[in-house]
Length: 79
Length: 185
Image 1: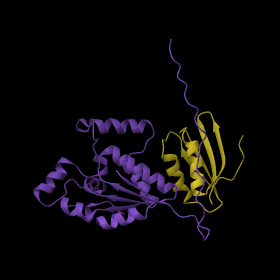
Image 2 (image 1 turned 30 degrees about the vertical axis):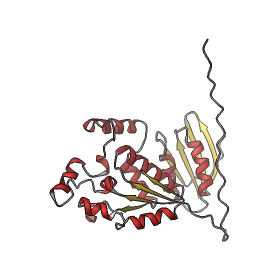
Image 3 (image 1 turned 135 degrees about the horizontal axis):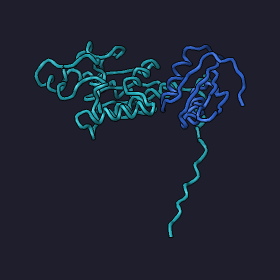
Image 4 (image 1 turned 180 degrees about the vertical axis):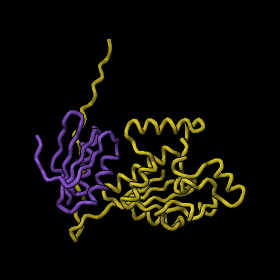
């Protein structure tokens, strides 16, 4: 169940452990404009809760959180 | 008869709501101060993980490096610091640089850290140096302790790029009292 969105940038954090998916996303989101959409791919099972929390603290909207096999996919919109 | 242990039900993620906005409508930026005192590999790991994650969460983060922690900031190519024999001896026994941090236990002359880093790589965990670089890219302030620098004979040009000018205990305490959380690691 994937909503097609115009993704500006993709962060491939597959195989990376905490806190790299979040830290790499934070670095990447600095390079896109407000309202732009970023896609994050991760395999860290803890990342789902991390992205919910991170979205709340930073205000970048977590548009989508899906899982396909072992790969988690997050779509975030920069505030 | 064997007792069956049932795991308590894991509560659903509780993420606290954001703070009430300030009067001007802006949410106050949270501040974290870490005093990095030990320089041990596992503690350097804790410091760099927390600093980079907090900065990723748009917190304002400062790390005050003091005593053994100061060696973390020494450039990797600097082998020996200090001007007198005692200071040089310190650097001989405690090789400066974040990549040379030792474990506080199970160090086994470097075998422990080597295994730890091998495990880290296998499990996709970033090394402290990588985390520190990312923390810097996210705006984390690295502040060395002047007293430790003097006592150990470490000079500003021996420290990695991007480190702020050294300060004293009073300045560090001021940072801590204004912060939302301060940690001594």
